[in-house]
Length: 283
Image (cartoon, rainbow, N blue to C red):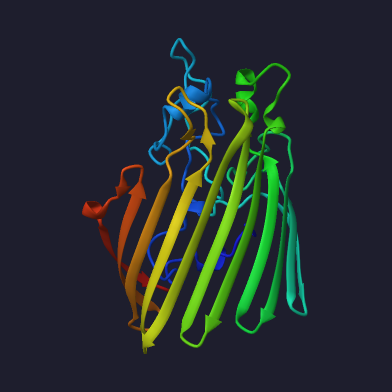
């Protein structure tokens, strides 16, 4: 996956913390192998994307195959396809065609007959500073849901479109990374599309040989849609603050102690502060 700049830091020995930015894994309530009956049924599942959603007809029969719903980008699975990449002077670039979209990559047979398009451009204006912009568009639903789509429509008629921007900076012992993504899902349940905005800012500082501190603020915010009780986000907004300490005992062995706290509809969940320890060994 060439959208964003997280891929080089996805492994535990490169990630200064434990969490992964929401844009790269956090599942919304919109699936790609099921179709909600209507917007109200989609709204009834707000906040359940990570645990799974299930959409049915009025008689209780499923409207597709129960499966994981969609994130903005799914970094754990890379799409089948081809990329051209290059670099020169202060620029780097990538252009690709794949079988799936960023949120629903295809790692097997074709699923809808559509080709996803991906483009990325980077520029380094100063030593240590990197800037990137990216865009991607591709159909996300599988052909198996065609029977639940409006008359004359097929899975390839509904696209996922993602625009992204990132900045990274390194100076002496300090590193800073930040990314933002705007995502739009075309869907039969809402003509204006379902949007989401996700961003994070992360920093780490090496204060002693082998030791560093790190922190990250992360957010996933969903657009509002109409409901019987007034405008509401089509999925539950979520934010997270994560901070921790790391120690490189050897070049191969990294130990981290991290704490996470989340904010959802009810506010910051300070009573549910989540501590964690990770030992990462590279070989």
